[in-house]
Image (cartoon, rainbow, N blue to C red; front, side, top):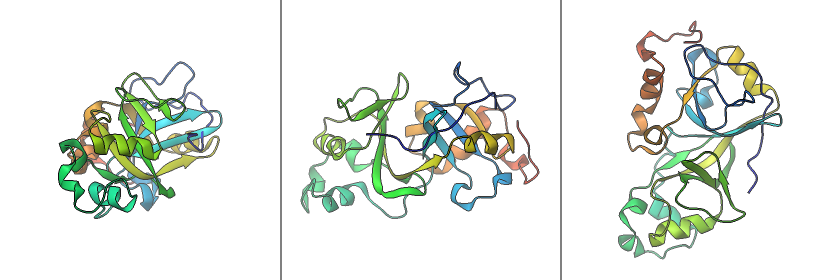
Length: 214
């Protein structure tokens, strides 16, 4: 599995948020969209950055549901379970969130999950607590009850060319903050944007199109 699209790193840091890693990259952190960005595809988005380097960046939107797509139904479409077998799924599979992960490669599924599950040569370990797997094997494991404790399935991803994310941050398009398991995997998808802003001390009601960094 090869996360696509990465990015050059520099000292683009949002005032009031903790610093990124020593190289200046933001992998393993959350991006929070600002109104000034003006891209409807990312409006009120919270994005977990899976990879960020001199080659660009790749992340998964963690707070935009993928319409009416149901995880058990998706398993049936992929032939992982047969019709009617969804009643046998473990509880975490029945309730697993299917999200719109971004505008790139929307026909492909990406599973962000806790690090208690790993597939050799298929799983990318992002930090101590979060991994990314994009093979159907993890969906089979989840359906059998042998998958990770926490997981979300995203259709598509967000990608940036080299230097693009840094430019957007410098233009006040994004804030960033530390990630936590609840913001990534929590059930309250609709509240994640406000909670991510509160995490860095911003009242969502005070934001406007003229807003700058926190």
